[in-house]
Structures are given as structure tokens and as C-alpha cells.
Image 1 (cartoon, helix red, strand yellow):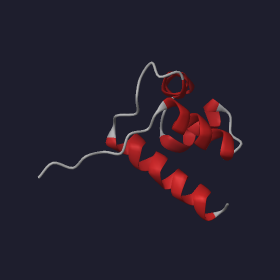
Image 2 (spheres, rainbow, N blue to C red; image 1 turned 60 degrees about the vertical axis):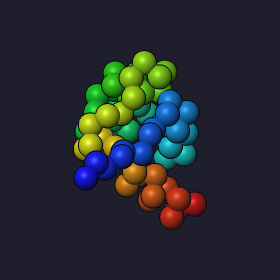
Image 3 (tube, rainbow, N blue to C red; image 1 turned 90 degrees about the horizontal axis):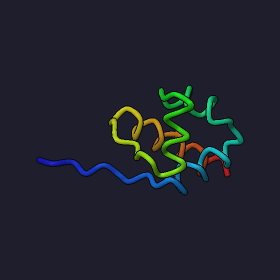
Length: 68
């Protein structure tokens, strides 16, 4: 069985971080990534690919939606 991971585009990552009113460094700490990696995600140089990063992003996104 192959599980397809949701895709986090640069716009989606940036919008989530801004909605949470966090710096790239603060956001990175929440998802287990460096500020440089978050910057790479937001400029579409790299896409979140580790399951742990994607899981953390999904959790933050869900919490942001529930608190909206």
C-alpha cells in the first residue's frame, strides 16, 4: 500500500506561517526544521518531504483552521 503525502506548496507554507504570526525561525521550531529550510519551502527551492515535517505542518494547519 502506498500512502500519498499531501503537497505543501510555497504559498501554502507561507500562508500558514503568516496566519500563525510566526517568524521563519519560530515556525521551524514547531515543525522540527531550521529557518533556512523554512525559507527554502517558502521560496519553492525545496518542498517539505519528510513525513515528520509534513505531519507537523498538517497538525498546525488543522489547529489554525479550528482557531479561526
